[in-house]
Amino acid sequence: MKKVTLLLCLFASSLGLRGAEAAPSYSVTVDFPYASKYVFRGVQYAKESIQPSVELASGNFYAGIWTNQPITDNLDNEFDFYAGYGLPLSDTVKLDFGATLYYYPEADTSVYDSNTFEGYIGLTGSVSGFSPGVYAYYDTTLKAFTLQGSVGYSVPMATAGTSLDFSATLGNVSPDSGSDYAYWGLGVNLPYKLSEKATAAIGVQYASTNADGSDDYVWFTAGVTVGF
Image 1 (cartoon, rainbow, N blue to C red):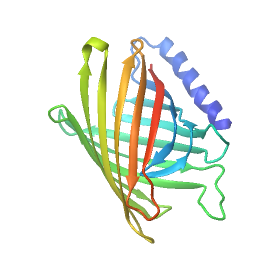
Image 2 (image 1 turned 180 degrees about the vertical axis):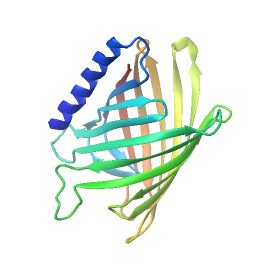
Image 3 (image 1 turned 90 degrees about the horizontal axis):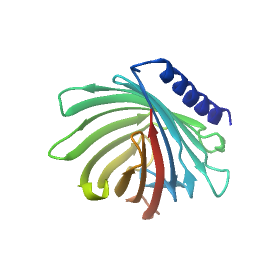
Image 4 (image 1 turned 90 degrees about the vertical axis):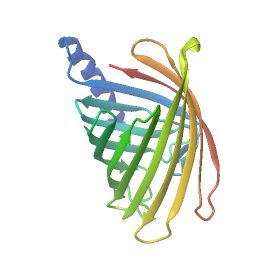
């Protein structure tokens, strides 16, 4: 509850500050999506969930809070606190690096860590309409290295005022102890601009892994994003 209150305070404060500035040097993005499943790196962590987030960006710096809140029960809650810096290397390539603190308030600490810390570094770009990216992550708590590549492509649908946004992901998780596993995913999203600052979107996602006992997952998302 304290963290939800903090999100609301940050949001309210940002509105007040923006009202006092003629040309703000930062932006705030608030996202409120629903997901029929919560799947991360090919593994399902929760069933139906809402996944609100708030992000503050100023120049090349950004920081935010993302959370997963299951609808069907009050288990598997998660809060991710992250911050990073995107350094443009050219007009089409950016170096991105930062860190994330994952916090699981209801975790059974006799079995799982209640929080883990992960650093990351990656390159993103834009080539002939495609948006490729490659990232390396290392969780210092779980002692796990993850390498992930992704690509996105958007097909404009100007007459409908929207687009079809396709994405594909391929990654590999290598823990210091235990077996490596690969994961992959596909997604398509349909955004629709509600106003100058608000966008609604619906989408469908697929993910799977080659880990023992793994499953194929398909889930749906729908939400609204507002920028200030």
